[in-house]
Structures are given as structure tokens and as C-alpha cells.
Image 1: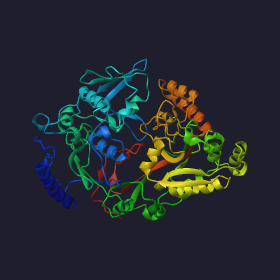
Image 2: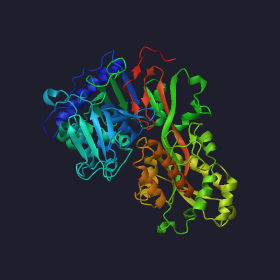
Image 3: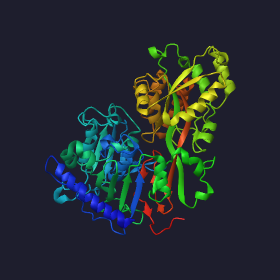
Image 4: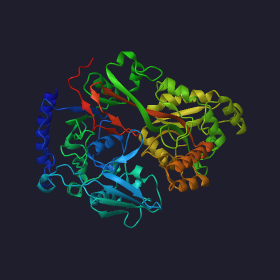
Length: 562
């Protein structure tokens, strides 16, 4: 199989190179040329699939979805990373400190990290990464001409004058407008990967398909929508505990099969080494109701279940000044609270998620995130009697006089919302479900035209501020899709931004509790990650934001599948 793959790389690479040379509009370095020979019989190749069927870009300035984040994490590095325990750990920055006033973060950089070999560097050899590259990369994100989808991470936070300061080649400083304690966590995001100005400026917008970074794998070729191939970076700076250079793999091959069912069939056939979650049609086949892998599959592949910082919810527009809210029963917090009490979240998890998720009865901050309180009493448990009591208080005894509530739902969540509708019917609330395309739903939510909607909120970085900003009235939609507004909440939010960790987490719980008392959302469940790997794969890691790490993956090709 590896021989065939090597031949495929050689033949495909030749034709792609030929077509590129014919179509290129301007002369210049051929970055498709690789000093790496085609993989031979000894090559270790990791196969994974991107189930959306496409990859928009390999430029970190536009790393807005998980697929791009996965690939960027293989090619580039950030100053800091998030490990599987949610710790912020060194990467290109060895150490860092914050000033007493919270306005300056100083990072001390490695001096042994080099960009990957590229014809645009002197002699084609990768040059050393310095603080100037960090400043260039961050300034590029906020430049209007870049139009980065990640500009929001710095806008309004960094100082207007000299926000990114180079002290010397190995010392870099971020200057802030106001204190923002989660800054190191933000710098672990894919947007903050470090890029070389020579390659970016030469290729311009085409840098999206001609990436160059300091990461463990280097770009080989990309047949968009079909195959992406990355090769081992022989000059990568990171080593394991035995001083052996990383990564262990020789290559990563990415396919783009849109069918989740077909993806898992390929995994069962041994043609993929990893699958992220599975199509719903396979869950009952593979998983028992308690969420464990059925006995007959335990010796065939490995299932790892871990924390995923994602909360699924039903949201309510709470802006009563909006004309669209006139006559809507959900403008009343009592009705919204009644809906919260009327839903049995445990049944959703058991019957629709094979017990894989955690019922969201502790608020919006998900399990696993610092600030989450497993013993919190400010969430909503299943209590239909309490729901009926609240409806009576709101003037709708047993739902009498309560007009049907319309909820907008993307088609991949219809089954759960249908169940929610049956639950609400038991206390006298009628739910009308309108199925729309996901992009249309997001548009309606952003324009505050969705009165009730199904949503999910995935952490951008490992700090609960990324959840609580969802309720800050100073922000538009997104992130504040519900248009929740509370002066006390906003004040507590501002105060939290310069608090050290433990007091900040305590403040986060207060904020979550306050928001939940007004019930702008119905938290449904906190998700878990399901990662399936072949039984000859070891060393696979991921963060609770589902950023996969292949640096330490080993593939034992001699191990036979049972």
C-alpha cells in the first residue's frame, strides 16, 4: 500500500507541477518543488479525512473552522499551545510574563526554530524565526487589507500605538489597551500562527495554497477537494523526552470525502487511520447506551472519549425593543425559565447521544472549562411541576392562551428538537419547528431575526471568557446572539479581565449564574470528543477544542488488523 502511495505522489506531483508551471501568471520560485524524495516502502503515512469535502485555505489568517485549524497546526506554530489538560504550555515562546498593571505581556522566544525550506529564502534553506516574524504575523491579522476572519481577537484589546513590539530578536511584547488576562490563551489560536513575510508577500492571496511555517510538517501538494499531502519537516525544532526529533511520521495524507458514512466505512476498511466522531447511523451499531464501545469492536480499533468545550443550546432573543419581539411569549423570563425546567436533558443524552454527552444543568460554561462548577445550583434540572408553576405566574396556566413558539433549527439537529417539542407539549407549550440551512440560520441569528433558535458554542480558547462574552451587551451578534443586556453582568465581566486565575474563575461562576437567572438560553448538553484510531496508532493527542496533534504519532505498519 505504501509503495502504491509513493507512486501516486510521484505521478500526481509531476502533473500538478506541470499544470502549475503552464498556468502561472508570473515567474518566480516554484514552491511545489520539494527536497524530500517520494516516500518509499519504509514511509509511515497517516491518513485522515476532512468530511466537509473542502479546505478553504491553509493561510492561518483565515483559520475560521476546525478543518483549517487541523492543517495549520501541522504546518505552523503559535507562541503557546493548549495541551490535553487545558494547560497553556510553551511553543515558540519559552516563557512569558505580564506587567503589574496587566497591560503588557512579554514573551521570550526560542532561538532554534526555523521556517521550513523554501526557494524564497537564501539558498532555499529555512531561516531562523525571530520576534520580527511574530510582530509581522500579528500586525497582518489586524490590517484591513488582510481582511482576516481573526481580526476580532485583537481589535479593541491591543493598544492603538505600537501594539506589537519587538524588543530584540528573541523578545516580543504585546501592549494592551485594557487588561485582558486570557491573552496567552488567545495566542494559542490558529490565527496566531507565525508566518514568514518573504513567502506571504511574494504569493499574496495565493499564500493560501503555498504555506510555509515552522511546524512539524511541510507542504508538498494540494489537489483541492481531492488530496492534500504534507511531509515530515526534517529540521523541526521539537524533540521528545529521549531527544529524538519530532515528528515520527513521514507524511500526512488528507482526503476530502463528504459522506460521513463513507468516511467511517473507509476507516473500517483500514484506509483511514483516524475518524473524528461518527455518522449518527453508526452510533447504535458501535456504542452501547452507556456510551462504551461494544465488545465485538474493542479489538478492532480504539475509541478515546474526552472533554470537548462545546455547549449545545436553544437561544432566545431577549431584546424587547426589537419589533420582531412584539407579542412573543418568550420575551417573558418566566416563560423562558419554564421551558428550561420542562426539558429532560438526561433523556436527550441517553436516547439521542448514546450517553456520550453531559446534560447541561450547570449553566453555559461547559464541563472541563475552568470556571465550570459541577455542584452549581444556578442551572436547570428537569422539573415539569416547576415549569407549570412558572407558566401560571406568567399568566398562562397549563399553557392556556400561550401562542405556539417557533424555533429555527438546522437540519442536523431536527431529531433532538422534535423531542424537545414533545417535552414542552407535556406542560402546555406548543413548539413549531422550522428547518433551515445552517448558513441561513446563522444569518438570521446575526440580524436578530431569529426569535428562538438552536445553536452551539465552541470555545475559541481555553478560558471561560469565550463563553461569557456571549452575554456581554457591549458586543453585537455574534457573539451576543440573544442580545442579552444586564449592567451588573457587564461590570462583572470588565472586572474579571484583570483578575488572576482563581478569583477570575469564581467571578465567571457569578456571571454564569446571573445570566442563567434570566434564562436567555436553554443549555442542553456539554459535548464530548469521540476519536477513533486504528489499533496500530499510538501517540495521538488532541486538545479539548478538538485540535489534533500528530507530532508524536507512531504507526506500526507491521501490526495486523484483527
